Length: 156
Image 1 (spheres, helix red, strand yellow):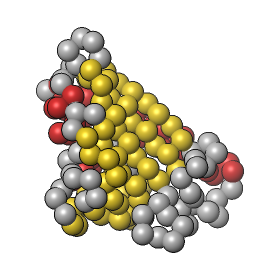
Image 2: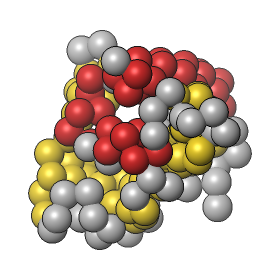
Image 3: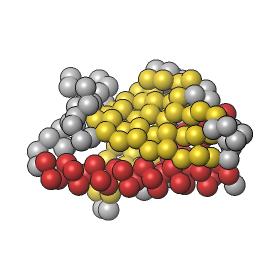
Image 4: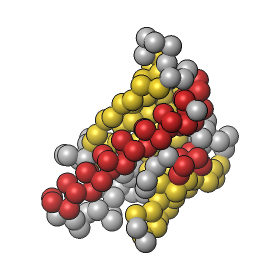
């Protein structure tokens, strides 16, 4: 179940194959190169990028930094790469991040990023509705920047 107002989807067309785009989005340690909030990640178990593998995602906003344990839930090369945050917490997982790739009909790829808050993480629970809406706006802007940066890398 999605938390009201805490879900967003954004897409971009990329002049690269779904295989090439998948290779980028499934390389979570590189995500910090593209995202204004994510600072990269470290694989912590299993085969990096495989379904069920885990990583610690590192984030920053201004001077605030934090890390979050994540588990890959979907790893379908050239089609979909997805993970959830804090899957072992009693009330988790909290957030699902999905990257879907599809041929766009021009030899490239349509990449869709989906942010879906399944349950409010403890750090967001005390926020007012206005503060949550502001947080969602920050994430939406970050998604647009991330997709533009992934596109630039894939097309270079």
